[in-house]
Image 1 (cartoon, rainbow, N blue to C red):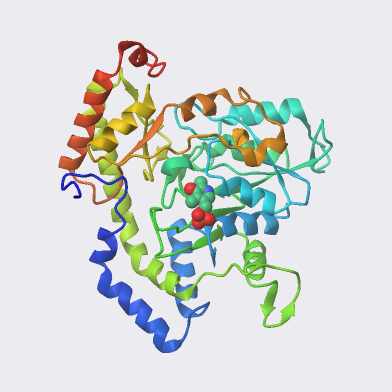
Image 2: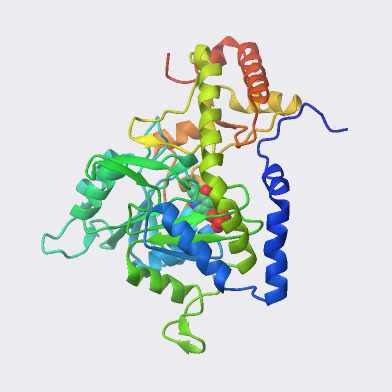
Amino acid sequence: MTNPNAIPFLDIVTPHVDLEEELCTVFKYALRTAGFVGGPMVESFEAEFAKYCNVQYCAGVGSGTDALRFALIAAGVQPGSIVITVPNTFIATTEGISQAGGVPYFVDVDERTYNMDPERLREFLETECVVDVSGQPTLHKKTGAQVAAVVPVHLYGQMANMDPILELAERYNLVVIEDACQAHGAQYLSQKEKRWMTAGSMGKAAAFSFYPGKNLGACGEAGAVTTKDPELASKVRMLRDHGQARKYFHDLEGYNGRLDAIQAGILKAKLPHLPEWNEQRRENAVRYRDLLRTHQDMMLLPHEPYWSKAVYHLYVVQVGDRDELQKHLAAVGIGTGIHYPIPLHLQKAYQSLGYKPGAFPVAEAAATKILSLPMYPTLGPEQQRRVVEQLVNAVEQAPAGQLAQAVGVK
Ligand SMILES: *Cc1c(COP(=O)(O)O)cnc(C)c1O
């Protein structure tokens, strides 16, 4: 029997039930026009999403992974060149880099935001690389490889600290491609631009995923590249479609990475609701904070700097004895997640990169303590109260020693 009081980690049923009629119309339209790949639904979604992100161009692709790969290739990443990112992200970030021919290099993250620490990026560039003043590519001293790009990841729905990252990128001639796959609609207060900027509008290009569980999700696989650069946009359009701008005239060898028309229609129907859904996530984050305020000696809550308006793709706390706590919550019907349990540099897939434990202490320490609580627009106050009650119960029952090592904050 299913527990009627269960609180799932994610609810991607309710929003689709609410919009069922409209979503079915999309499917019927596709059936009746046989417009399954490309066409007006794709184009009109692209136009709407570009507007939402405050950029001129959006190219719909098959997934967020496609978006990363195509954006990096279109931005001119050359085979064997280095692309810098963070170790605490979904593997798609580095798959995109490797599949574009690049070699992923990592820098550690900020301990409060879990996003790329611009100081670590500066340190890597200043100590391990040489910049050529005449505008030549930056070189990595040890390998002689070109350092081509930086991929900051806007993790959990909060943008990375972009001003200093962009400034360093400019000084070292690096392309910046945002991994905005978790950050549809997130905002960053740029000191340089003196205004709030939207995720996907700050780098040379950005990658979005519309995997069903993302803040804007398709009913299947989908992704997009956003950019202000018309050339980059048209290159991505070629890459996603076998290198052709005109059928059977292939200017280059590309991929099959197009956005499905039905998914585009579904995304277009859902997009007008995204601002409200993001607002509900932000309200839920405020409510968690209020409920957990008096328990901050037991756990570390998410930190939103003044320059950030996060869209809470995930609500992540740090606790000691995380695995026991997760088991306790599962036993009482509360779903949680861990994003992510093993930093990429310690994954078997990246053994060949040669990183050792201890290389990125902030990301590594966080990986053992992070716990993602239920977070979605339809999560209600009563459910949040129960999540917090169970969480606090479990933490209080944990042996004192484990509590003490919870997190280094008081
Ligand atoms: C989801 C995600 C991706 C990949 O998107 P897919 O659509 O699953 O290919 C890339 N990076 C991050 C940070 C993600 O969360």
